[in-house]
Image (cartoon, rainbow, N blue to C red):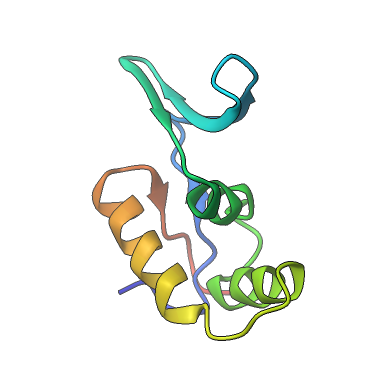
Length: 92
């Protein structure tokens, strides 16, 4: 589990960018590319190493006018960390 106060960031070997040819956000890395679905892209776009997980959840809930995203965001960030896409960062 990633602490709610941790400040996750995209891992250094990855670059998050919008790829017009794919019409999607992708994570580029030396061996290839991961095409992201919309929820994954929205979460990773907020992983800047300055915002806490709690702040990311709050921002997503405001942006999409919904509640209850915390469990899904935490689950995604845990999977992203296991895949090496993000590092959890230090708690704020």
